[in-house]
Image (cartoon, rainbow, N blue to C red; front, side, top):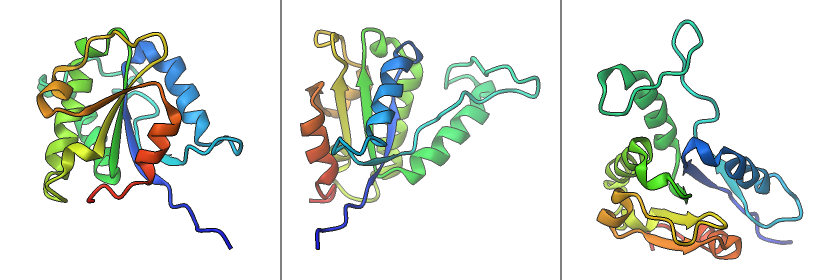
Length: 159
């Protein structure tokens, strides 16, 4: 009898311009012909106001509190973070905030918090600039490589 694979709980940080590639990435976890196994713990829909309008505020704006709280709830459930790096990811206030917030929230779990975060450059974006938070935390960066990502998801993050 084979070993049971327990999926990693992963928060995926990305910019909305890369939504199509994010949707493809999510689909991989549901494809029985692919080995990538994870539970997606990231925001599926934008947080909206009472009128149903997405809240457009950056994370440092107090009006973004409902968005921050929802993302923090999801980050709390995640044991890993994957940052999908496209051509404009480095400009995103939200991606930088998510990386830093995840790091702060998980810091108490182990002294190896950086090992819980991986950045993967999207296809065609191998020369893209990195978000400042990734550079500041010396997070490992990889080009699009699902085999390497899957190996990382199988590793013990505390090892």
